[in-house]
Structure formats: C-alpha cells, structure tokens
Length: 448
Ligand code: ADP
Image (cartoon, rainbow, N blue to C red; front, side, top):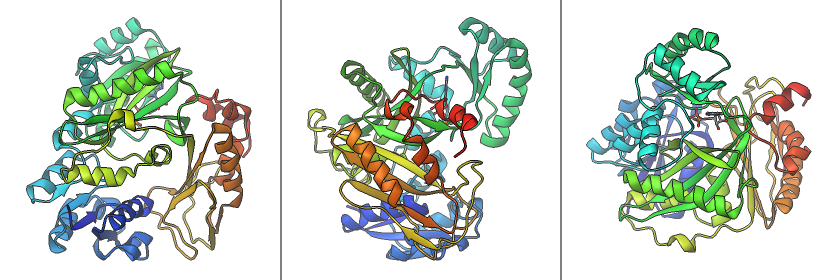
C-alpha cells in the first residue's frame, strides 16, 4: 500500500482525497499555487509544496513542478482529482515514467475516451447504442451536411476533444450548419487543440443518465448503479440524484449492464463513469469520463462505499472485494452544487467569507473547503460546496434537502443557494418531470 500520496488538485476535491487518505493511514502532500497558501487542503495535509503563481497553467497544470514536488517529497502515488490534469494522458504517462503510481486509468484509456469521436466508435464496437450521427472521422463539410440531412434536424455539433459542457452548437437547418462548421472547427482548435468535430442528432427533451463503474486489476468489473444529472445549465450539471426517478427497473438494469459491458470490452481499470442520454424510453451512449466525478458523493450515500478509497486500493493492485449482487443501493440521495456566483446572472463572485455555517443532522453531508475568514481567490472554478442529502425515499430526501438548504449560511459572497431553494420547490422537480433543457427555460421565465 502507498505510504504517501501527492494530491494534484485544490479546493473541496483535494480535501475529499485527503480525507480518504487519512482514514487509510496514508500521508498526504498538498501542492498549491501562491494564491492558495491559506487553503484548507494545505492546512490539513502532512506536507505542502508551493508549485507556482496563481494562474492554473503556471501551477495546477504545471506538470514539471508537480512531478518535482512528488520526487522531492518521496510520494509514491499521485491522485489527480477532478479537472486540471485528471484527464491528461501525457501527465499519467509521465507520472508512471518516474516510477510513481498514477491513481487513475492507463494513459491509453484516458486517450481513447478523451477523444469523444473515438469513444463513440469504441461504444459502437462494444455493442452499445449511440445517438444517430457521425460514424467515422475526420469528415469534410460536405459529409457533415449529408449526415445532418440523413439524421434530420436539429443536430448538435460537438468538438471531439471537448468537455465541461463547452464547444457544442445546436443547429436547426442546413444554411446555419454550413456557416457553423468552420466556426466550430476553429473554436475546437482554439479551446481543445483539436479541430475535429462530429455531429449527433439533438435530442430534446432528454435526460442525462450515467453509470458509475469500478474495475480492478484482477478482471472484476462492477457497476455502482446510475445517477440522474438532468438538472443542467449550459450543459453543466447543477443537481444530481440517484436512483433516477425516470427509470423502471428493467431499463435501469439494461443501462447499468451496458456501462459495465463497455468497461469490460475495452479492458478498463479504475473508477469511471459511462454517460448516456435517455429519450423516449431508449438510452444512448454519449461519453465516458475516466476519473472521479463531482457527483460521486451521491453514489457513496446510497452504496455506503468510499469511492476514493476504492480508487486508491485499485491503483495499489488490491482486488475489489464485493460481487455485483452485493452492491445494493439504499434509499435516495441528491447533491446540489453550490457555486460562488450571482444566482440570477451566474457571474462569479469570489471574495471573503465573513460567516460560514454548514448544515448537519442525520444523512446530511457537506463537501467544502470553505471556512469563515477565508478569501476565495478569483482564479479558479466557482464550485464552493456540495450539499448531499440522503433519505429512505425520494420524498424524505427532498424534505431533508429543503431543511438543509435553509440552514446553510455562506455570508460575504453571493452563492447559488437561492437558486437551489427555488428549483427544489418546483412541481417539475418534485414530480421528477424535468429534463436537460428545463432549467434554461425556467431561468428565462423566473426571477431568482
Ligand atoms: P461534456 O463532456 O462537454 O460535458 P457531454 O457529451 O457529456 O459533454 O454532454 C453534456 C450535456 O450536453 C449532456 O448532458 C446534454 O445535456 C447535452 N447534450 C450532449 N449531446 C446531446 C445531444 N445529442 N442531444 C441533446 N443534448 C445533448
């Protein structure tokens, strides 16, 4: 087992990983930018190393600085967390080249699934349904227009190297598609350093469902059930819940089996998430994330498993001890992502936290690195807290969530707590009839 793990991340993600390490008796090394000297993960870690100035490219994305910190502190493994270098295949390779274990999948799998068009081909090969669209890449503008005509409008243009809900364009007719293709290619090149684009039929309404999978180095492949992440803004998740209220048991089992089938067919090892869209009773693969997800917490609440601990054990070569039938999901869990943003305009609002009080009580969990007096630097993601609640039933969970949001105090900055309070009292949320485009429309029609 590892003695010391370097955590190549910041904020609540770094804290989440630190907590798992602590409980396993593993020492931690925090790395941080000059803007994060006072951060919670730095305060709690056994050792810390400053790796550069505030901008992420100079610190949290600075591979030589992170590797040097790992070598200097004799870390035997690196956990990349979420975002930053978590899906950088070259980083995973370089870590291993320095005889340090990368806590995640192989560089080969990161590369395969990091290219969405290739991932789509791999899913087709593994026997999964994909959304009607491009089958091969690259293709020219003429081929794009033919594909769009064949599958029918509206279509969505996606960047092969895209992620984080960015780089997608919904197009309703041939004329607009013709104009959009060069723009989409140049944006893809600019943001993702890969000009490849591909097309899919645009599904609306649809739900975003995903399945957590776990694969060890001994050939054990299991799924840890599904999550429903259909409450989104700008293609980014805002609230997640499990189990999905949109599924019957038969479809749920098929969905989870399809995810495990893909992982098995490609020989995947580590934690991962297979994402699908669910529309008109059918589910379609959209992508696979080869890392821990922000919303892994709701799966932890229903299965009782510590996913970061399992991820570390897998990287250390330990076999996963449970069989599929032993992984039972109890009750219902919901996560609200709380951002330091104006809840109406979504403008980031970093600043000093004057007062902070996290809710508590039975089945309430808060993952956050905030504390009273902490000054949030303006350089990074605006996610400041995840509120996760569990209940025996969805209704109990909703009532608990309402109560927990009422108790939450984050003073000194604006946060999206009022947005969550508004969403969860809407009948479309209570009745679970919402879909991925619901929130955008709701925000157009309502003041928060
Ligand atoms: P990213 O990796 O950038 O997050 P995804 O492929 O996971 O991109 O898609 C993010 C979200 O975009 C989905 O959850 C969904 O809301 C929307 N989306 C993606 N593809 C489609 C599609 N073909 N039809 C409708 N919505 C889509």
